[in-house]
Length: 292
Ligand SMILES: [Zn+2]
Ligand SMILES: [Zn+2]
Image 1 (spheres, helix red, strand yellow):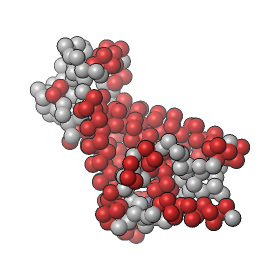
Image 2 (cartoon, protein in one colour):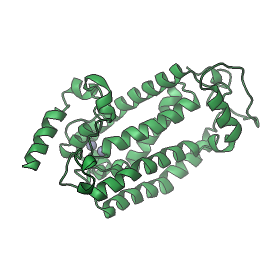
Image 3 (cartoon, rainbow, N blue to C red):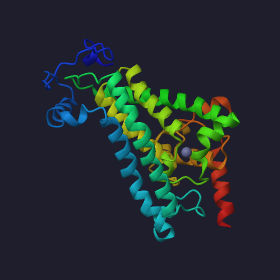
Image 4 (spheres, rainbow, N blue to C red):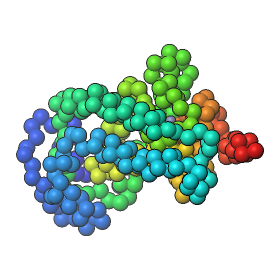
């Protein structure tokens, strides 16, 4: 997938030359964007902290609008109509608790891990060639499918094993009704595991850096969308056909019935293993009961 890394022996760079970005003759659609990023923001994007910055700022900015929606509740009826568990609304205190946990996990665990990783495996120089649009989307989809599989297995194991659940995953189930900030309401071990795969998967699939960053932003959005607690009509689960994507209704149901819907994004693994809850029927029945 990545021709730009062919000659650099990607993670075996013993001596990284001080590279100034160079332009490459290319008619690829994303080349102007890639050149702009490299020539104008080289220091930022070549920093080992850039992926973390991208992920954390994505989590922060995607969660902000739902803070207002959750706090206003019925006062915004056009959105409140789509709230899955209408009687369970997060408080400001709950949101601050989850956000505080995310900051703590990043400062105490993620930052030292990035420092250590950048010492052991320095970042390879950025390639001069941009990915094609097809390479970008296939890299994103491949990474998402791989991550979905890894998390499905990890998630199911952590629900089946009492000790693993208690010490590693239970924190994420503090709330039966998820809300945007609770996306990163995670134990340090869960966050580090998820972060490890998020870093490793694009490397294994030889993705371009631009593909990796795109995947990071989109996957953070997908994770936040899983937890918003609203079944919005334009959400990914309504855009992807044949119920292939679970999204917020599926993951909301996982927080209500933790032995179902283990996959974070797609629905195929839960269907294969018989752990998929009939989201629509269950949710609708649940909503009707609550509205009576
Ligand atoms: Zn969750
Ligand atoms: Zn769970």
